[in-house]
Length: 101
Image 1 (cartoon, rainbow, N blue to C red):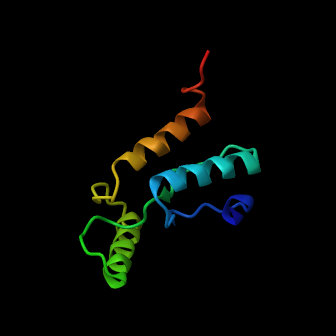
Image 2 (cartoon, rainbow, N blue to C red):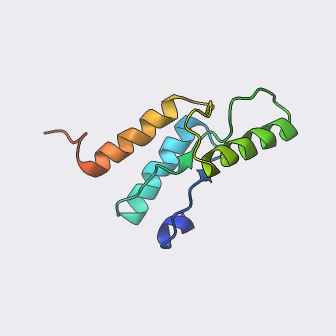
């Protein structure tokens, strides 16, 4: 939340949370700050789908994701394809596309 209070725009914010929990966190953030927010740089769950369950393997998947974003790689194999849909939904809300009449 502190990042959104400052005039700072990092390329990567990783949330160590399930999609459901991340969605709840973003909704609360949106309500608390009451301003237009850009969620395009938020990744949840963090990491690429490279396999593995150990802390070291998870750390490698997160670093790999950060590296892919640093070099603007588009096909990263993110852990969830749905997350991009969630982010797009927030962007559409921001632009007034999903508003009910």
